[in-house]
Length: 382
Ligand SMILES: *Cc1c(COP(=O)(O)O)cnc(C)c1O
Image (cartoon, rainbow, N blue to C red; front, side, top):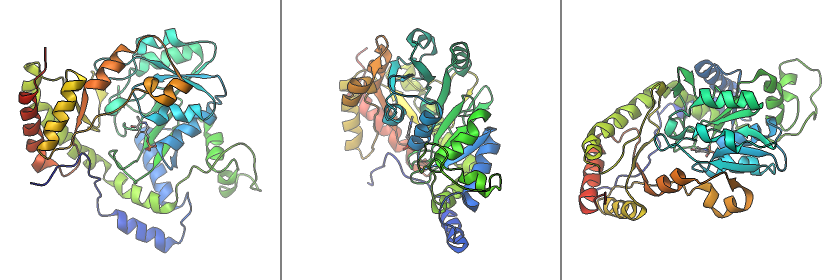
């Protein structure tokens, strides 16, 4: 019996056609036909002022750190339960990540704990929309307004998700998407920065183009192209954009197919939740998610390890993440926790992600059966 991988990147087939077109166009550096198509799609689907493709979500977060002008000693409030680069993009500028705990329902930053973590050095609040389910953005934006802080949304997992009808990534001053092959819409490696605050749009283009005014030059807005600011090279070439455009053309259908799988897991696991054997994901009212991930919460670290081993023995490959950043070696060096991160510590030890990828359909019952069998062998000790 073939083993079921955790992830399998889905390709529409049209990627190769678009790459062939980029080849024919002969424009291989950034900001050609396909990049413009991707920018247009992002701007239409999110309503952002300016969408800019980048090499990765990490690169988009690095740009946001430059745009927010964070410097040595400035503080950025974020969850510890997130991917490394949420923090690293700011540590690169000498800033200090300040971690607050997550909510037990969505595993998103606990908005009620943010205000107490604000100091005179706080510059940015960085909500991470875990599993494509929105953080409590009304509260977060209100805190930011009252304390004059910048909000950068890590919407790496949140493409086409909404909060009270508003696309994730379009609510804060800036938002960052990922098109890594483990996400819903992929380019292999890729990302985008949504610049929602019009005051930052021009500088964002400059930072992305090596600190030059090249974008304005190409639009005929200035008559020479020169070094005007700090910056780096954050734009992907056209081959990547051509690939990504094929994915964007089918984004709704890709998410729809993921949603079918997500709903099937959710229905199949309801009895186990009712029996107290696991907890299923919670999607608060007003949040529309994108079926980025199906995770369950188990009872303990020991049980989770045993369940993973038992499922692997049956040819199914679930995974877990993250090692909370506040307890990671670099986290201890570069950041600090505000208060006790009780939910972060407990939930990160019990979370298990099930395989979820377009094409899994026929094999999904095998995943569920493997989980049920593993839980019979290793039941929750409640
Ligand atoms: C995937 C991910 C990132 C990093 O995205 P890259 O495109 O690989 O740089 C950052 N934050 C979160 C929450 C992610 O899930």
